[in-house]
Length: 391
Ligand code: KIV
Ligand code: ZN
Image 1 (tube, rainbow, N blue to C red):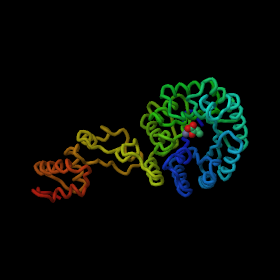
Image 2 (image 1 turned 90 degrees about the vertical axis):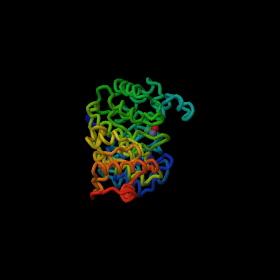
Image 3 (image 1 turned 30 degrees about the vertical axis):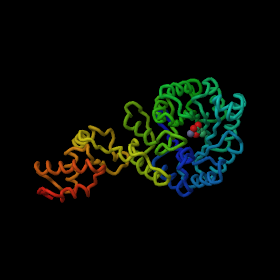
Image 4 (image 1 turned 135 degrees about the horizontal axis):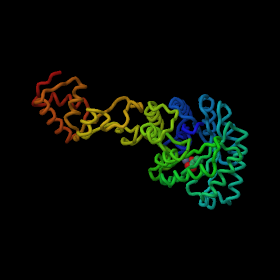
């Protein structure tokens, strides 16, 4: 992968699916995997085959279906996990085994009950085994951001020697701040990757402090060339970095982040909608990029600005992310310009005096009713004290 191109590793079907309310049936997973293919992700992490029979079958089915994509399967650095991942990946045209072990002292002491040197050995042998069973191997140092830096670099160097070509730095508990994470990536780049073209630094950020996207962007600026993310930011606890936000930040601010990618942004909204229709919840209305209100303007001043020139308040168009049209929401904060524009869409044009009267009745209605729809506007015209309307 060239140094100015970012690979998008989608883990909606693995880290996303393992979170509450996000379970998917096999057919749904296949449909979503096909959509992720259309969207242009580089790698689809299809599941964790040793975790359950269902996960194994999903990885196998997606591997058979999405032949034009690289399919990844997750496994701990244990032999049975890696063998199972390799078996599930067999139908794929292009395979990656993603193997992981925790490296922070807190995980070593309380979860793994292993010493640093034991974990180093497990990381090395897991990667060695996986290298013979897949086209490429990715290694993740779970809880990397709370790991002693010297030890982290030692483990990463060992797995690179053992055959890993993608080294993933997860902020597993969403603890890091963007400048800190950027510095961590720079250090790993200097101390582990050096001049090698063969090793890609990847990042995997969780959103516990709401910083997953900011941390991913800081990492890209520091040289990471794979980002792991999910549609709508679903994932463990507060979720993972939202794919649509990473991509649009890079697209809108390509002046600051001159790194290309293979994603088709016009597929972002349809993909988000598809996921929402499959899992048990949608996105919050004010969610960046794909929320219902992401391109809606209610305040009068904003509406006037957007109607005069969308660039006044829109840094990207709804169409650029696949939202069908700019939906101005009419409410008590709306001004005359928005009202005229909406009536014009309904084929109604007013004189100045007529408008005063209609606007007055509109504001009275808006004080009583939260959402005003086209049918309410048309009823307003028919209500008492009618004005002469030119249809
Ligand atoms: O959050 C995490 O550390 C993970 C790893 C398995 C990559 O999901
Ligand atoms: Zn994760």
